[in-house]
Length: 407
Image (cartoon, rainbow, N blue to C red):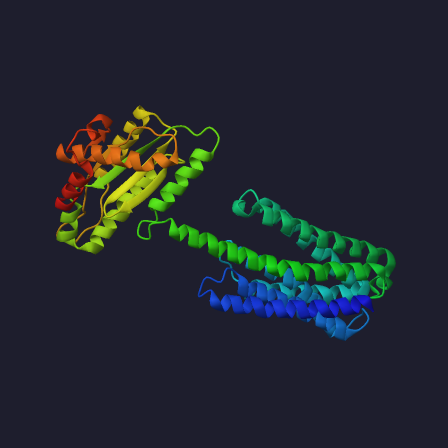
């Protein structure tokens, strides 16, 4: 009797969370992160348990066959929803319908040849293998596609491993004790459905937590990312430097301030849409030229920053020259009469610094070097000369802005 009450409460939980998942999916506007598939999984499992309650004692009948098919299809639905959550688009209905048809046929074959006990054993064995695969996938995800969710993946793996073990135990009990082992008044069935009720209560809020975390991470990324080029913005650069300098073994860093030469002329001649294409192309070159771990940023307009981490003056100069040549060789498709558009860039390099709070000073040094490069003919790399920043009456920032305005 206790197991029947628990199973009834589990049905209510599953159907309520099914509705909640579906409502959440309708509010995510296109990027549902698999919530509608999780809703389908809960619906199938809830209906499976309702049919189990309506069918009465374990035995043979249409309700029992449909219940078993839905019981196996539900976790497969959760797997498909998880794949969509991790940005792996996959069809849902055809895999589920194919599985339902194949497993129903397998049930009928086993029932007619081996009897009801074998059919129930088939479900327990199939579920054991499926949950084992899900456990291994969650553990694998901790080192691959879900590195940012390692704790969550470990929790999911432990919970799924529990239901895997219970299904394996049920398989052994059925094989040794026959249909009597499935009596709802047995201690094992009570423990089984208590654990299932626990999962039905805990896992849905965990799924909602993952969605909220993913949305929060995306909002944080948007707040630290330039919308046009997808590089870091000033805030993202500052946060990246803070994270780097907090790490063990953090070495000195340099700032490369990159300014596209005559960018105003490009906008005036070809229009702002082409100008945006040029900015995106330069951003691609910046990203591909940077070393692993370096921070690429767009400050605004045609100004970019590359923070070279753990390098000396010679390394920063070498990287800046490589970047300058890569930008000069890049091209953007232009109007038919004009052909591809090329551009050059002037780059100023700051002195090395070893803490994130020195970013402003490093940008001032790089800006002064950039000013000298612009005044010296553009398309060149200049190293910072900090002593010149201290000369009375010099305003390199203002002069650089005037030059940038003039193109």
